[in-house]
Length: 158
Image 1 (cartoon, helix red, strand yellow):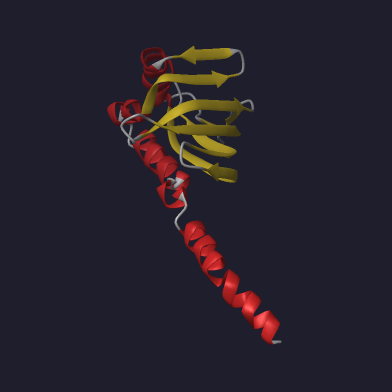
Image 2: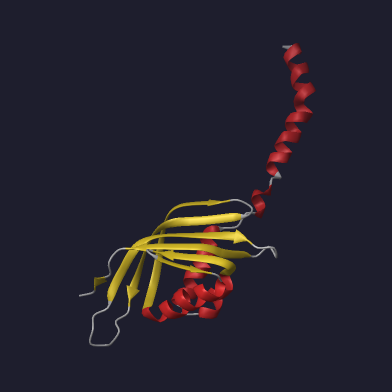
């Protein structure tokens, strides 16, 4: 028993050092991806295209089916500004997510109300799968780097 106690005392500083280093890893620098997505969705539902665009990385990619937009200017114009007026009440339901100090993603399903082209036409509901990938920028802000939506056919509201 005394021999075990000497062994424990001899390695106690190493164990303490390992515990301290483990507690001081960079996980505290990781971002809350749910909060990033919440802010993005709130901006989308508020139809705030400027705020949405501020979340986009300069080299952002947007994919949906055969559509692929690249770069902040193209994604801002063709996805955000052209699509924003046609949708409302975007909701996401996360299935999986992961975060480290440089990247964060969340993936799952979404639903959104699709607004009619005219008051005489019915609105619809769009549903599908999504992935939003965020990357830490050089200025330590988090920017949306990749967005992919795979939608099912829109179903008319009755």
